Structure formats: structure tokens, C-alpha cells
Length: 313
Image (cartoon, rainbow, N blue to C red; front, side):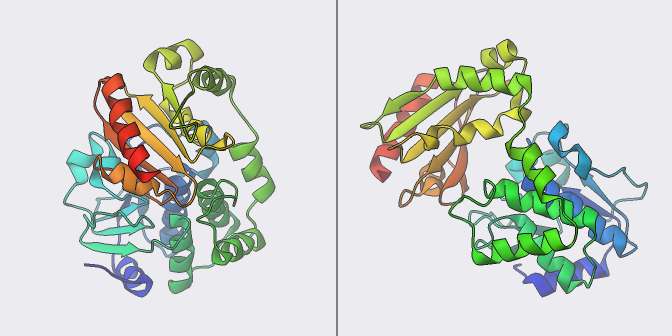
């Protein structure tokens, strides 16, 4: 059942002992929203923990909270459009048991008992800020740091097409509440690990152009991870690189997983809809940023993707 922010707030107020789920290979929005909501619930005197399948990347470590001891009663998913995105192990434990999903993806599969979805929001963090208001919880500096992180990372430091006037107003509010915007943006956009820098160099060397140079494609293999010393937790920023090339309408990053299969991250410029491209492979996301799972044959993977991209171009 779909609920609005008031319904979601009423649910949170009426329940306790929360496990908050973030998606695998977490980004700043799922973690910022998850830990922001966790802090809000704890401020209400409730017990809450955040759970993610993967280790939290170092650049998000300041958001984290120590776990509390309690018997789980309520499960909330944040920024998760599909149970598959919980990741192996977590999905098997929680699929069919999520009580409330708070998300901003139009492709959300409404897999939870209650769904609070706003596809007009640039980040799930926008919904968490609104819930704090609904619950009359003052936004502390620690909460503001979490939610500003969600806003800035899911908008590319407020550069993407998903940004609205509301996004800017909420970001300003978080700064007024104490969010360290300068340091957060420095860590998220101006700081690279040496291993990521090595991976980025290898990724750029792999870039290929198709469809009259309107499509650029990068491939990141397990061999590249080994050679650079990097891993999948540092790979998200790579997805933005192909679209940055002049004249490219669709940028694709194909990432090889440890099991040999591939995942595609698609970034597009208007009017091309990345979510339509990915939906042909069972994926989804936003108009200009989406993803999908693919098979283990790289040549076939590229050919299938390019055929669908050509249709949309």
C-alpha cells in the first residue's frame, strides 16, 4: 500500500526496534538517508540500527553509528527500488519482511507492506528531511551532515537534471542546521584514494565510442581491480566519466562482478531516458541515471546494450 509522508511518519511513530536497510555497494544517499533516519528515530527515544551488505566506504565513515542491542521488530528500506538491490544474504533474510520503503525511484517495485515514494525528489534524503519535520524532530548537526551527504552525492554536487528549487532549499536548511557542506563536498568530490586514481586511469584507457560517438562505453574488469588495488566500493564515480565527453548522449560503464557477470550503469543527457534503456534488461532508475544486471559474455553484453541504446538515440 502506498502512503504519503504523513502516513509514513505515523507508522514510524507507532513502531520501535527498527532495522534500516541500505542497498548494496552503498552510495551517499542510501547511507545518508539510512543513518539520518536512524538518528531521527533515536532522538525520539526509539531503538534503531542500520544494516548494509557491504563494508561502508571510508569516505562515509563519519556517518556511522554504533549498533544498539534489541530484538528487531520493524524493517525499513531506504533508497531501495528492488529487493535485488539489498544484496545476497540480506535479500534472502528480508525479502517479504520489509514494513516500509522510503524511496525516490519511479521504478520502485513496491515490495514492502507500505511504500512512501516520491519520484520528484532528487534524493531519498529529501524524504527523510520531510519526515523529520512531520515527526517534529529537531535536525541536529549530525542529522544534517547525513542528509546533506545524501543530497549532494545523488545530485553530483547539485549539478544533475534531478535538482529542483526544493533540493536547494533543503540543502540550505541542512547548512543552517550545522551541516559541514564544505568538508562533505571536499571528501565526496575533491578527494581520491590512490587506488581509485589508478582504477580511473585504467577505466579511461578502456573507453570506446559507438553510434557516431554519441555513446561512450567504459569496461571495468576484475583484472583492473586487482591491478589498481581498488574494489567495487570505489567504482561508483567511474559511472559519470563517459557522459562527460563532449557530444556523448549516453555514457555506459560495464562493471564485472566477482561471479563473472556484468552490471551496466547508464548515464544519459536529455532527452534520452536511461531508465527506459535499463528497463529492457529488468533494471531501472532515473531518467538520466539507471542500471541493470547483465550476463557473463562481454561481447554479447555490449551488443545487446548498443542495440537498445541505438533505438533510444
